Length: 285
Ligand SMILES: [Zn+2]
Image (cartoon, rainbow, N blue to C red; front, top):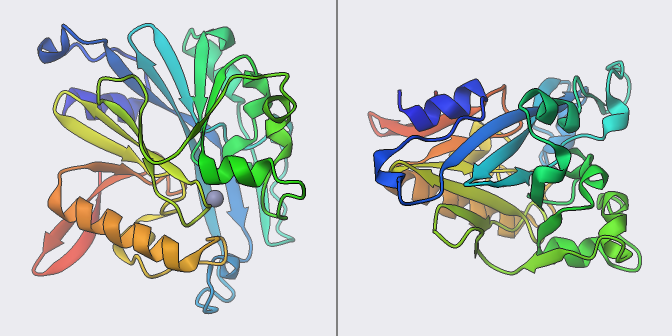
């Protein structure tokens, strides 16, 4: 197992001590536990009633990146107010949080003020819940999502409230990203535009020591949606664009060696697409 992948798995924020990277800023990543979502009615994710009567437990992952002396937080998970919440079996979904991001940062020896950049995959409640704690940081957000949260009347599934400090100008440091963005300018941490689930949905591609890891956000919630790109759900804002994005993703994963982090799939959720006897499979790592 490679050192880079080992770092991903254990969730420790260790520097990559790569000889090839001695002239570059050191890069490390840690997965944070940003909550659990009990889906009591999985059918809300199907547009063909494929999951009638089924339930599922989803995890919620956030990621802390260290690039040289800079820290970046990718997604902010469920709201801190859900810490310790009981998981109700009534209603389509229930959510809870074990530890807040701030508590997990403290365990890693990282001060909240050291997070200079918060980049988000998209505006859904389970990806931006703890955003208000990071109003001191620069916010990176896809253009389509920024337009949705700043609309006069945001749509019902658009969680605009956590963005309030940036929208009101109290936290003025926001960068609206159109297309892909090379965050640190060295080609190793790239925000990839993957629209469809939301209009400005972003994933993040991280390269270290010749290996690449793609943190999907909800470009695909699970390996099934990676393997079956046409299986969109009611949670996907634009079904046609979602299919197009997921087809391009699968095509790329078949051509290139990339570790994938499916953030809602059982922790840690890392895997690869492999082909055996003409069929594609998800191989968990
Ligand atoms: Zn989502």
